[in-house]
Length: 411
Image (cartoon, rainbow, N blue to C red; front, side, top):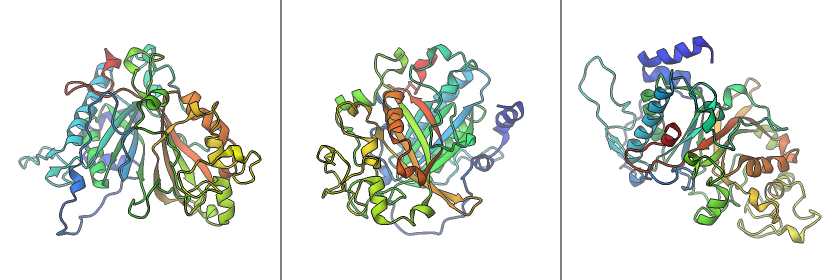
């Protein structure tokens, strides 16, 4: 980071929340909402505990909205960094539980709360998940010897077109909730309280299709069901095998997980010109039902053994490459928790929309990268292009009201 950028970010303590929003791509200033007499939604009171053996926002069912933010650590010392990370957990603990906002007396000081959700900050199924990038373990803070075994910078894969400004970062914060205003309120709160410690690097906002439209897995912006073949999060043995780290890691990192975050742009203008039959052959599923080609229901086994030559489901179909369902490949399964995203038009007047891909796994190389290597060169690469993201290690959860995520790293 240049000295000039560091001075700008550290000196930002005098700036207001609006200046922060202007520095993060994609945050727009909204006008006042129209008055409404609609009653408050009961879902606003849904609360997911921040504390636990593992962090929330990994195994939990996805709420409707998400924001993923990557930060650079800009603190001057290891102690300041630790204090800033503790603040993230402290604010997450309060925000996910809900509280009555204190607007405080009028005066010259800054308002204690943005006020965008009103006088009551409801939990709204908010989860705040914290991760560390490989760059945090460089020489700045004396953490190199404590780096998780499998943590490294995300590589550039053969079909990527990565934009440097949308890649990597020291600290990842994933926020998920039922409503967008809850996420924006939480982001502004955390950013305000960590100014001078964490400087924003990149941000992506995600959404899910409405479950009112149909049951089963939601659809991505290519129009296909996405996430049908996820492992069972209720199976503790499977999660221990595929998601949670164990004795292979330093003691502080056991019970965490690795996140692979990918911003995958969909070339929707080109995709929308492709015939339905060709789209289905590239994916390997019936677009309307979500079923594997030749099967009846979304959750049906594709039964590749009965189709060894790929006459029903092509050998290079996305679902077949991603999960071949052979004994040798089942250990490379990942837990997918993606969201759709939609941003602006680009300079060529093409829509910038696609998939905010998020997966959790115990071993990045043996799982996520194994899947990526199988997918290299698939027919779908003509219509999707990864442009950003990164690898992050998510420590175990805060164990009590005085603990914070990542505390054991600094012991």
